[in-house]
Length: 153
Image (cartoon, rainbow, N blue to C red):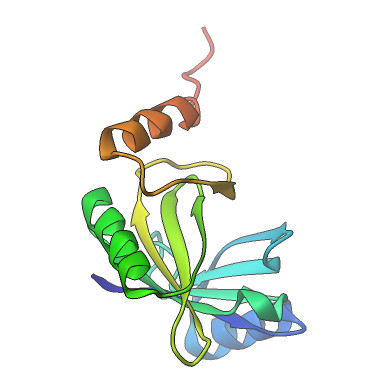
């Protein structure tokens, strides 16, 4: 497991993005608006790599995220959170990731996620991480975005 990204909040994510891109040289990867995050700007320290920093307008969306290497590890950590009585907020199929969110003892939001290998539009579909891995993988295949179109003939 490793640190995946940090989600900071600000009333003006674009102004904050200007600071991180202009002063620290981060690259703007994407910008979207969702119900959960409000305005969301993704920044990366490595061009072409996954975002390291998320800037969000919704203060409730602030979080720190840790990436796991396998779906099995994500499911095991989910089960451990439930066993320990950790408050699980929700779990999502985000398209590119499956993740779940918990609160740490100080009330900070923490996301654990696994990269699915899918690319395309972000989603926030609920996912049941107690289902067997084979069921989850089948669902991923069924919801994967279509492959890019080839050249016109």
